[in-house]
Image 1 (cartoon, one colour):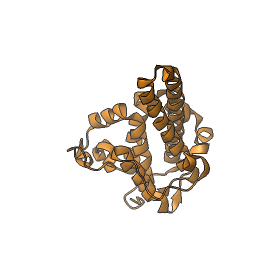
Image 2 (cartoon, one colour):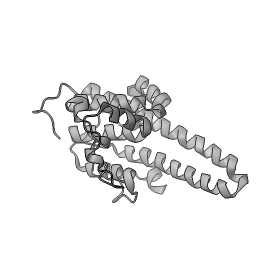
Image 3 (cartoon, rainbow, N blue to C red):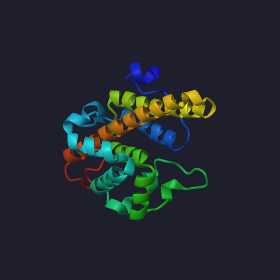
Image 4 (cartoon, rainbow, N blue to C red):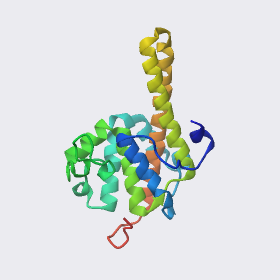
Length: 210
């Protein structure tokens, strides 16, 4: 929590495991890229308020994630034809080979967006970062880390509430706060992605940096 509130530098390493840890490591590896996003997360809402509001309100249903995943695939590749589950950012685990799962499947893209809406939105953002050699804005680290820590706090409170009935109202309140913060961060992420796509001209194999 200290890191996300007072430091704008990325962590030296990621302790998280599983899919979230893989995505966090993927973003950490991009800090050496030469380019920057056209707008950071903290300013994205003002730059594209419509995309921010729509993603914030409807982000949990998966529609924005599906839209942005396809938009990024269309811009930097052959569209759904280039789709794989989590776009290869999650390695093989639990006997599932994610990098080769659902190749070219529109249904796979739809299921990913609906089942893992916020994570899928992050995958679209990572895809842009690789395609355009973009590093995250320093404050992006703080915003995303703060949202993640709020969700961790929410989980801890929910566990405690299972054993202490008097904590259930507090746990429910923290759940609402954490989910609201996550929705707002997702909205800013959607706005950032949408704005970046608008600033990107036609992409050809010669102009691709990935």
